[in-house]
Length: 314
Length: 82
Image (cartoon, rainbow over all chains, first blue to last red; front, top):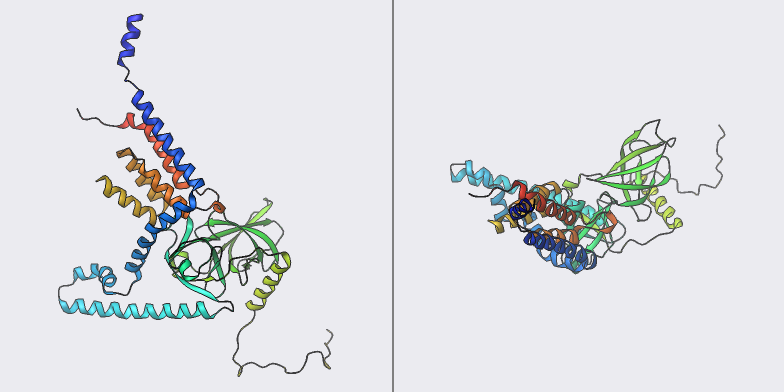
């Protein structure tokens, strides 16, 4: 028995090196989590120095109008062509498409900057889901351009999509309201209720309300904590009569992949009380049903409505 | 080779969905003893993660789990040269 044990022991590999290696793994993991929880902002700032140029470069190649990006984008077409005349033709076609893209971008910028009463900062989106971690946007403007932390971010005139979570010198990180795990208080027109909405990721938000409350596709959802904070419309309702809750899903008006320009508010979102929230909702409601009709088409009474007017009885 | 793979992994982490990062991390950790993956995941979580979204250390947690799991699995799947 003793001989057998000695032989068996000799066949096992010495495991002190494995223990040392295992210990190193756990030490590294522990250090990583400690740094993540204690020095997150410092590491984020340092990382942004690396990531911002990468995103700017990629965005430049994908959408830039200079000779180099146009050449790279059209390279695959150029490889199949056999004459200089065909190359010139595709370059001209590319310039024409680029001009058209620039006109659209100009129009979008004008609508972003002039459509709201409060001043905003236009910013380009250089990284967006699903090509950025955690369903976030990276903007090409930062503290140097006046972007502030917790400022609301809009797409279009009044469609709020998220808020600025972290700002660096020349870039900013935006958390979307549709990011997984983000909870917000919203107001739903139609049933006219306050409720909580939860981000599901991929530009989708969910609200869960008890059965019996009628919520329909197309109902507008707003964030009462943000001035002019229209979030989106309900596009799907899942209601099983045997379940106590029904779920409605809201999406942004534009797919996240297609959002290239946004506007950022100049002031951070402030915590509001219920009265201010109700006022914001009234403002949105008024704006939803108000159209700027040119004076020559608008027919309106110039007298006060309370003079000599009798409401007819049914 | 390792450096090129790591640079490629870094770029795909910044520009590709999470599952691409997961697959490449697994392959990288299988091929090399790779503490630098933890640094990469830490930087991504520090910059993009936010406490308001719940689990904001998803990348670091995944890399930690992958490294620990592969540490125990590797001896059984590694092929040695004769």
